[in-house]
Length: 446
Image 1: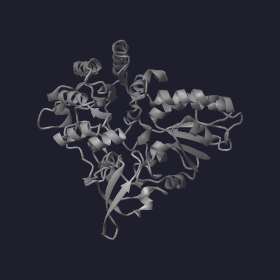
Image 2: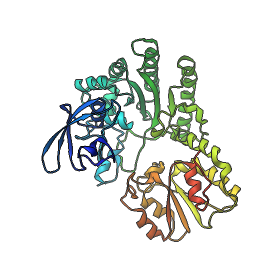
Image 3: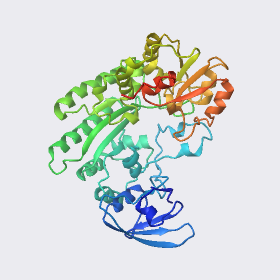
Image 4: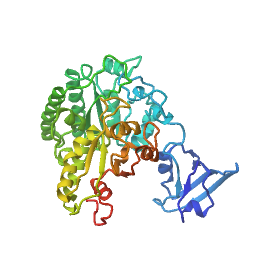
């Protein structure tokens, strides 16, 4: 279905309308945005359009090679997203509350979403035609969940019936020119220790080999994220546990030792520890340049360092007058570790008395520390009715397109129950300042 038309575009000129369906371009079926972008890139096109009333139109288009048709779609994938067929022992979706909102239950393992949105895939459902399409359309980079290179251990971790090899898959993708960002969800006593060393050695060797091979100048392993397993109060697997602070600290030390070695050999640190490991270990975050191009920031790797760097760039813009009395900023445990010093500095510079509310997660359990998993229920337990005159919450607590928490409570409902106005704050520290000092228009994102 076509959701919209760009004003003044070719599509508008030839009479295509929202509600019509794009069936094919030059007789090629269009199953996703990749197809659309790929086949649209030509000077002469024949579009097969099914009108909302069922009529079929064949539209001939002459255009410049890089000129766009002007169709807007509501989703990146037009057929069904390929779902995950694994049963990972650490799967976070399997640890959700009973009867969650249906959209939370989608287990995406679709290589197209990996290319378009950076979603991690296991590659266990790749078919031969998928490899051919990846090569033909140069779908790179891809984001791969490795976890371990031991096929039998990976079989156990992914809940597969057969050994789940990954090295041959990675080698094939690299040989086709694919750049790969990889992750290891690390579970204590399962894929850490010697297993982790073997996995990192194997991935680093792929990165080294791809640098040496002239026939694959574009392909290779570009980054490895080591992310600790997340556990909610609903999980029942006795194999799973969290890292201790001491284990997290040792893991950071081991990773940072490897980073120095890789930097000498590859010109890149290659492997990076998730921010959560630094918080667990009580370690300061590395400087922003440690994370190079922030290849896995959406995976919680380097997000804190980038936020702190951006704060340094704008902190001199803090107004010299206090915010309104009774203002509070709510965040999760991880978020509090990042912004506590920033709130203190804002208070000192402006003469304010902003309260930082560190909200424990009672909905998923105290072991869940990510701010994005805080719910309205958690906020109700952490804050008394009328306790503050104004409450600021980060936007990542909410559904991306609606003001609704993971427990389906809306911001309006929470505000009414707390009898407190609530402001939603964007992800940049400048967003925080603008929200706090809403009467100040001089703040600009650095």
